[in-house]
Every structure is written in structure tokens, then in C-alpha cells.
Picture (cartoon, rainbow over the protein chains, first blue to last red):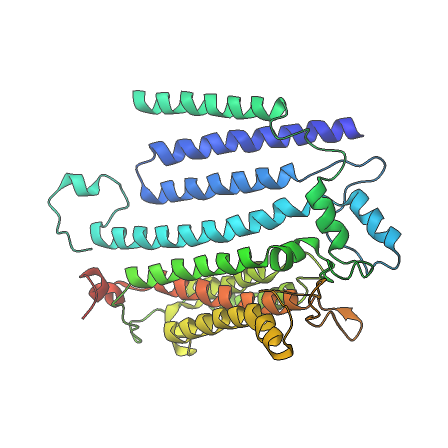
Length: 137
Length: 267
């Protein structure tokens, strides 16, 4: 059972790493600002999900459980049993912080892109080079 | 074209190297058989009435880590979101909300089904925040879900309908400010209490510590409340929902409303 789980886990990790590379390809080569922004979102989300995957763990006998207690523990041994099967809660806590801060940056970026679009009528990054434009923003 | 190929090859190398590092154990054995030490401490103390000075009485270990063990970090994270939305306000300075530009929205059937969906979304959002310390969820997730209501309404009913319903950017801004101020107030409340009883207390303290007896309510009618975790989750819902709705309305503004802003804003 654990061999199959490990194989699936390795496959998932590989997919996330490849996803990071593909997303950064989009950031570097696309000329549309909107596509660049989408690539950045995919890039940061791939890293977030990679971080969460690193918090995964296997157990001896049972399936791992989410880091949430099902009910109030009645004895100290309930807590110990929870620690035996729970996955790592810390990467999830860090990732939610990363998501909020990523969202803050993306919000500002999208605001800039919308104003760029309203000004030039396109989201192409080369628009200012093509013609004379009035610098007002 | 040649540049793109060079970028692709170098990124392929990057992915291969990252994969090799992970395979050779750069981040330890993956997936590990036993929990890391720090994670063991958090998981064992999230709800542990037998260790009263370290527990947070939260069944959700992630919520305990976010708002109790790393509370200051999360307060600053909320401040970062606040700063970003203030930045968007500065970018869109000079926008005027104009009613009567038209915009009828989509078909009647779509509108009716969206109304039902909006009710369900609001319910999910509120329950995510209120149960953030009992089940997977939390304030930020709830706020993001709540902002979906505004996004859907703009798409289906048009921004005009939102204005007519009385939703203005100014009131959203006020809600956001009040929520952030309340988060700071709750974080600093233990200090005020410590002054009153002339003892020791810490910023963002939740439950009693070894040298400080100050504690937020741990349970309500036999249901775990997790003290400040619950309060922070609810306030974060308001702060994030108001911030994101505010930004969505600004982003959806029509050309006529943005005219002044595009000319440089100001007066």
C-alpha cells in the first residue's frame, strides 16, 4: 500500500515542479500582460501546493488524516493518537499566509494592467514602443 | 524565437535540478514516516486540556498555528493586504461612481438561479468563518468566498444593480478599516488587561501562560471557542470580504467612471 502511495506522491511532486517551469516560461516569453499575470498566479499556486505536499506523511497502519481533530479528546492518549496520524499542519499555515500576500501583490498588478489597458487599448507589453504616447499615468 | 528556446531549455534544466534535489533528499525523506518535531508540538497542543499553558483549545491545528502560535505574523499579513488595497485606491484615484449608465444584466432565468446560489455562498462563507477553529476553514477563506458574491453579482446583475442596492466603495472602505482596527484592538487587549490587574500579558495572547493568567473564553456552552482564534476569524472575514469586494467594484468600473482617473486623477 505504502509503495503505491509513495509512487503517487513522487508523481505529484514531479508534476508540480514541471508546472513551476512551464509557468515561468509563460512569465518570460508571453507579450500580453494579462497572460503574464495568469502565469504568475499559476507559478505561485504551484509552489504553494508543492509546499503543502511536503507536509504530507505516511503512517504505519492507517491512512494519514487532516490536521483537524474530529472531536474533543477525552484522554491524553486521544491526542497522542491524533499526532500519530495527522499530517504536518505548519506548511498549510505558512501557505495561507503566502496566498494572502500573493493575492495582495496580484491585486495591485491587475489594477495596473486594467489602467494600462484603458490607456493603450491593449495589454501588449510592446504598445508604448510602437507609437508616440502621452505620459500621464 | 531563438530566445524562447533558450528560456525553455534553461527552465527545463531548472525543473530537472529541482527534481534531482528533491529526489536526493534536499528536503528530507519525502513523504516522511513521522511528523517533524515542531509540527508534533503544534498538533499535540492545538487542543490539549492537560497542557493548559501551551494549548489554544482549537480543534483545527492549522487555525491554532495561524492565529495563536503565529498570531503576530498573521496580523501583519492582514496589514499587507490592507496596504495593497490602499495601493489600488491610489491607482484608481479620481474615479466617480455614476448611476444611470445602463446595464441590465443577463437573462431572467440566470438572475433567479444566481439569487439562490448567492444565498448558499453567503451561508458557506459565514459557516467557514464561524467554524474555522472546529473544521477546515478560517477567516481568509471565508472572506474570499464572500467576495465571490460581489463578483457574481457584477457579472450577472451588472455593477449598476450593486449601486442601486446601496453598495458603495466608501462604505466597504469603512468596513475594512473598522475590521482591521478591531483586529489590532483584540491583539492589544491582553496588554490593557495586564495594566488593569498589574500583571504580565503578551500581545495577541490567547490562553493563560505560565506567568500570565489572562485568557480569552475557551468554550461557549460546551462548544470549543478557541478564544481569540474565533474572534480573529470573524473579523478577518469582514476585512477580507470588504477589501476584495472594494477591489472588484473598482476593477469593474465603466469607462465613463474612470475618465478622470485616467487623466491623472486628483483635483
